[in-house]
Image (spheres, helix red, strand yellow):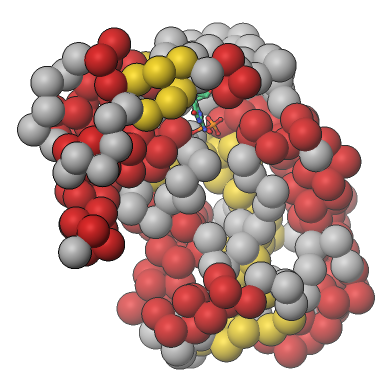
Length: 325
Ligand code: GDP
């Protein structure tokens, strides 16, 4: 039975990946920090078969112990401080967890002298930031626009460097935005799906957003964790862009969500602008070219933009209705 260690296991991708690896018969280990008790409790209830091991990406000793205990064949580093807006307010913590965290984990694996551990790094389309070309592929230069993006770029380069320096088996997935009903409500997709559901049920009259113009390549998280796993099953490690190849604006997202909830797609009526939600630097337009993943991994997304928004809105309509009753 192969074994896998996942950091960030209680997050959106961690949950999807736990589900996938358990269904494939893996022994799954999840790294959890001591102080997020509620999250851990909720995760435990949903995934009683996953072994939890305590550790923190800011603490090398704890990572060494976690690798020792789990003896993983595969390590998936999904842990990070991942909300871009927050990274502007906590740049140093972001650099520490999101940038240095992966470096520490690589050191823990290198020191463990367990040959053949396969490592997946959650790289991000935010590294492309002020894009140098469209669409973005594995060879597009990085131009990050936030402390989160710069930290992810550092981590990505560290992974490439460890692969080349120590012959370690490391693949980075440059994942474009990926969402779903498990997404945290600080991200715009979930904020919109929840807000629109509440409006449809008469619990709210509007939702408050920042800029409606940025465009993103939004896919479904369930599809994207499958790509992570596929990357670690290849003969050689490589970096892959994972994206749908289709971009939509935040405005499109609101319109699609309103339609899914059976409301008039009248953005001016339902959305209020709050300038405090603008960011010091914005990423205007991201769209990925996932040809390599398609050709080498046989990967393709199964859920399109409308399907994704509909899945999230219908989920949040059910949730809002049950909390109202
Ligand atoms: P990101 O691409 O990782 O930053 O994902 P987010 O979901 O946080 O943001 C996607 C885009 O939506 C960004 O360009 C934000 O500036 C924009 N946006 C507009 N209003 C909001 C808002 O109220 N919350 C968030 N999170 N993003 C917003």
